[in-house]
Length: 337
Image 1 (cartoon, helix red, strand yellow):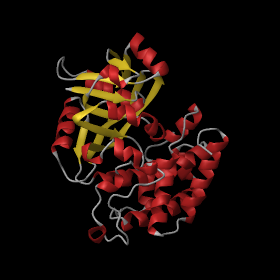
Image 2 (cartoon, helix red, strand yellow):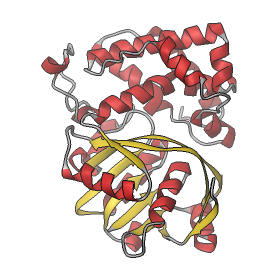
Image 3 (cartoon, helix red, strand yellow):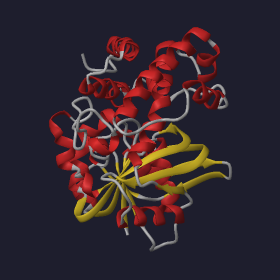
Image 4 (cartoon, helix red, strand yellow):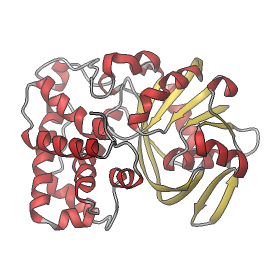
């Protein structure tokens, strides 16, 4: 089986290393990368640090999809702002039956392809097949990467990059996956079997959008607030005023989720209690800010606001949060003006 990982950041590098550990002949692992990462992996291999020590894996890397050829599975592990630039390369890696697995944060391009029709979900307007301008302007991603061949993924792992092609695994091996168009299917089953063999704690979901929305519900506030303040999760939640503001934004998003058929039974305070147990964690958006990388504002925040606009539901607190984090990122050259 030929598997290509697009993007060898923290999660992409981690999955590539675990797959490379499989017995010889089980899978051919490659990666589509560029720049310093391409040079580092060619010279030193893909490096992984974990509780068991330091490891090196020799995998094929290239910056041109033609050099890698058609793949059976393509794992897209780039950050959301980078996806439009690599989408054509991902499409070039596919053959007639290739599966694309998205392992990314936020609302994906296929999000509204697997939701129930409006009458079943109780939504005030039909949502099936919506294309969000904040995520996929003009439907370009949807055309290049058809949802019918896509498996969605929700990552519950903690990892970081120590340098180009060098990944450190901190905790967690859980990955929830499901068909982008809803239900269970052979694509999901095949991906689940392979990743489980590689040591991933895989769960399958008949409605992966529900898993995406629930994770997003927490990231929607913690990520941008941490980027705005430089605070870790425990510091954010220890401030009563900030905690209350986050709860207000989450309540707005919770109402939107219920309207599109993705209700959340948990209260914002209950979610805060879970988040607080993580301790002094720097969110991914704060890490991106400190490293000078583009911020995942649209997939995490803008998309939720656009859903509210489509539904005709005001989100004043969410609007304020989006405006502040967007302006901050623009001032630092990390978000387009």
